Image (cartoon, rainbow, N blue to C red):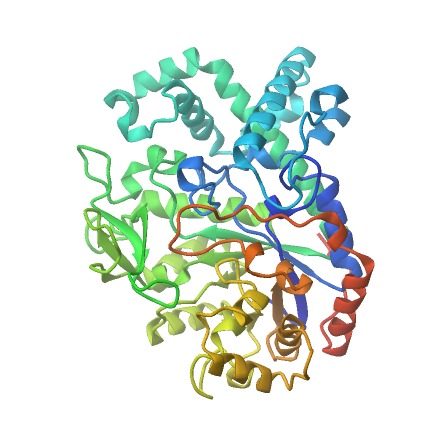
Amino acid sequence: MHNKRSSGVLLHLTSLPGPFGIGTLGKPAFEFIDFLRAAGQTNWQILPYGPVCSIFDNSPYMSLSAFAGNPLLIDPAQLVGAGLLRREQVEILHGFSEYLVDFPSVLAFKEKILEFAFLQFRAADDSAPFAGFCRKMDWLDDYALFMALREKFHSSPWFSWPEDIARRNPETLTKLHETLSERILFHKFVQFCFFSQWQIVRDYAHSHGVKIIGDIPIYVALDSADVWANQECFVLDPKTGQPTHVAGVPPDYFSDTGQRWGNPLFKWYSDGSKLNEPLLAWWGQRFRHICQTVDVVRIDHFRGFEAYWQIPATEETAINGKWVKGPGLAFFAEIKKHLGELPIIAEDLGVITPEVELLRDTLGFPGMKVLQFAFDSDEHNAYLPHNYTTTNCVAYTGTHDNDTTLGWYFSDTVMQTSKTKALRYAHSQQGSPIHWDFIRIAYGSVADLVIVPLQDILGFGSDCRMNIPGTSQGNWRWRCAARFLNDETARALRDEVLFYNRVPASPVVS
């Protein structure tokens, strides 16, 4: 995938600076790309960009859709520029925090201005680009109807709706398309705004030599347009629509009881041996869409394609689950028939077996090497750079699920022996910042690509971490204030890029 040494930065879109309480696809995104260019970076990794829900603490990994964009990321200033809003309609009545996303306040603000913009859009009747967008997005009809129904039923989950709607009776759906036509049109308009703005951001990134690495969770949320519209693809009780078993992972580095995610599992096989054709079609649609939106795709929990942890839905934790064989190579062979080679990074963390490694390597996907995991055992630890057996991997100082490197170093839960090994490995001098030590270790490795969370570049502590796995509140809120993305930091990072021969940015040929 990467034929030369390069590097990039991990920063989710919601964490961008800006005046609207959350990162947007406007000026802050362009300025961050400028920062990446100045810092010699050729990659920007983001988290899933789908619409989020307060029930799941606004987690991007529990989205209402595997295809749609998050309305909260739409840039109000561009709507003003497009003539869809007046400037006074987007004036901030109260100051938003530079450092944290206040999701309820941001949601109220964005809902209000998007309704205003929709009214102006309807009045202008400039429908040609919009109609073309709606024809192109083959997932949009189901999503827009799903969102209109969520409004109608006050955000209650789809499996609690009247049975003819929950089970998608064709006659009922036809009538609903008529009675809810205006709200369906609104949700299509919102997606039109998102993807129109996103394309501008992506084009700007390419013109500055920056590729965008997207992220898709292997599983989707139960209460999502995807499950409601494709119930034959999931392991659900035919009477209740509820899953009989749910997804998660066994006890690991992050949790003694494992993680019970609660997502429905895929119905991989239709008759015990043949791959489920509707599910293959859905995955093909999903891969096609994401590859038209980003340049490289990180598959979260890739190991679930080889074997997945199946937890009875009645269990409160993940302890009493079991491993079940996944679709493996046969699945990717079918996808390749229709889509060709896919630019994928395999998130291969956690309980990894030789079978998972064989699947990854047979497919040629680069895996992940996380430095924070490198110092908790002996010299044979696979995450230590001297044990990397291939250049076809992506080295990280940490991920969105890790503490920041500075937070890791000062944490009471990390053994002192691990910290001592890290300092020895870095040949660290007294007073040298540990986060820059980790960046240099990663940059100096043979990994084709190195990704560093922005928090580690800036030397931020635990209060700036993005997510604590196994917890359900208080995550996904961190934002970066604009003043931290300065020329001094960009120059320091670019110096390391040049020293370790990680190629500075040049324009991407689309």
